[in-house]
Length: 285
Image 1: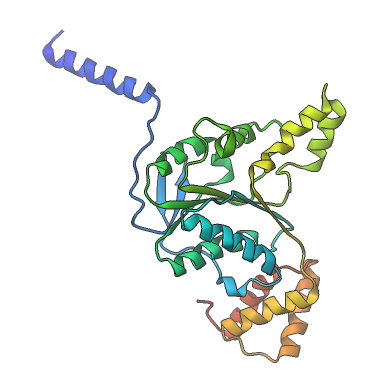
Image 2: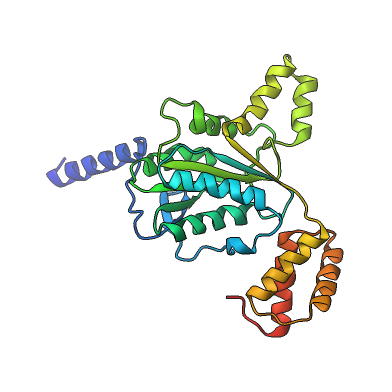
């Protein structure tokens, strides 16, 4: 074998060994933005120059939840003890909007004090890899997972439990975990009932399933809003974006919009405002 052939062989062996070796946590430059999205495939953080969110003053009917989450986020930004938070409840009631708005509000008070890092539900198994990266940063990070839930034989919840509170390393001091879900225990009721009826030890089986939510020190419930709150949401958006329309007419159209969708919520109100702005030739910016 010639020297060239031997060198090529050794290079191929080295490449194969590198691919087979466990991936080490990368270092990441987190100074270029205040928000990032985690991509598990490739293990990298994509900076987000403009976060899709609304001003916290436009969130109506969730004053108590807003105050609690803001206080917790401020404590975290100041380096004080704070809790992971689970925002659960009805669809379209402002759960994810509040997380993003709270991040913006705290950063407005203390510019650059907090990162917002979003991890998608399907990437939860890669959470330890992401935390290894964030642990090496000197910035404080709100780790956010929207619409978190588990079904069937999905075992990812076990790794999430360990990462949040139960593992040797635990949650890094510079990271707090905020999640939104339509389910209080992050699992469907029929899944929990099936465990009660079919498991050898029903109490232990159910405890295993629902104990994940116990890892969140804050449980904030969100419920469908009443008509007056819905109108307040719509009127707040209309005033903010300069959509001129008599209040009675605005309410009548907003109510008709809600009736056709069978629900009143912040999301439905925002969808109505988008339609109204389009008809009035106004840009929402």
